[in-house]
Image (cartoon, rainbow, N blue to C red):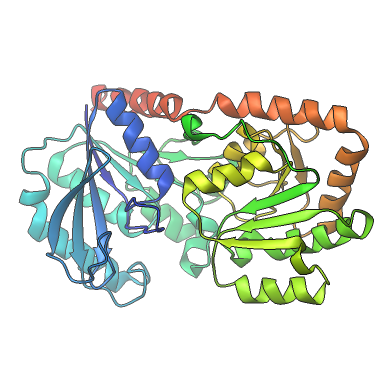
Length: 384
């Protein structure tokens, strides 16, 4: 099967040009014997993989065996996605490049990630090739862009697809509320099981959060929960892995709370090093809101952490509170502190919960995810 993917440029300093969950899924398609070409719309002037800011309008790079076609277009915002003018610019430039994009590649399916410009480009490719279009929503409807909270805008974009895939039930509820017309279904993300670090010895009373330091991730809630926990357990330690605009405020919060050296900021780490931190930590906390799914929860569970997420968010499709992890109300540091305290008082029960979480997470491989997608793709191709 020839899969033509549209996924925006998402440089994270980890050696891949798209979001890691997109990249890992593409690798799983390749391992299953499919051919993948990924179109990466990139605003002009954005620094590329090699550090260069100005490159040809269309150029190809192979990363991990995946053929990436970087398609550059004029942008009037930092990320190239704000406002209809940027989208129209991308569509116009793609039309001019269609023959090169499709050269030596006859797609069977078009797969666009993320609502917005990518969906519009996927729709153009669908019209030009006659292939079915699948759109995957990863939770962008809960992001800071106001138009993405507009049910009419969500419906307008999503209705261009033949099928909409949601990475969690929380996102499917959003599509239901927007009265999206195409069939929409849930396919949970996978994760790279082979990279899990499960041989490290857990540090006593160690807490970790891994992710961007943004308001969405609610790192400040984790810090406050840790402050309350440390009042009873002075030896507790918190590690925050990631970088972002909230770092200065978080450092100030730690200083004001008298946490001193008890909180360690690692900055952005390669995925392998972040997994090592998970392997050494006993508790993983990420009280995010508007979280589509969160692959890092899977990584934490598979690493043997007692994993704490937020009620009603995407991870609620996997975590059953008190069985394989814990779910707490949003913005409730006391609830987080109480969960960790309960685990410390009931170590055998907490260990059993962590062990079940590990077993459940290990079932969600990228191979399983890719098989679910290719089954969907095949049904659309045969029904065309």
